Length: 280
Image (cartoon, rainbow, N blue to C red):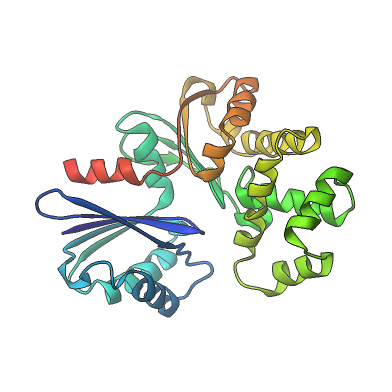
């Protein structure tokens, strides 16, 4: 049996393919080597997936994950997976390769992830040839859920939100400024916490202040990543991720202002990856 995984910071999508090409799907929490050690990854998979299928029957595992860009992080994730799936031959790749294969197929183009975090690349149909360093949610990740959430929270902390939005936010979340500081600086996975506010922003995206705020986040995304690739106006750009899917209309508007053509926007690459590995 073949197992395929696509993992972001918030959620991991799994597809199980048996010998008859039957497909089962599962999900669990996100697996990031930046926030979880080897033991925690093993425990997460055991707790959330062990009752779904027999780990011992997995022969091949193709894993695409956030944070798997350096040999050290790849080794950490691979060691954890090997503990869970003892009989499997395991291949660990960056989630950016998953995005590129999903939106570009075998053609050249640009691929972008806009979920909890963000990342981009140029793909030649076989491999990634250029990658603008994303720098993570504190120093970068422009256009991501964490970036949108962080920008919104900054406006809240600085008393810059419109009164109607402030009342809605305080009524729904009941968070003080001190609660937010505690969760960002002292609690685990602050990127997920910040990204959680992107949903509230989306639900109120017709508000002029928030609409302009989101547009500015995507303008920053294009300026700091896409516009730095050679010949970016000559290639099509495809997106994967929840943020890209939710904010597709604004993204297309901003892309047009930079003369960038969008090829496709999909919420997750897992279906395309399933098809890819079924064929190959």
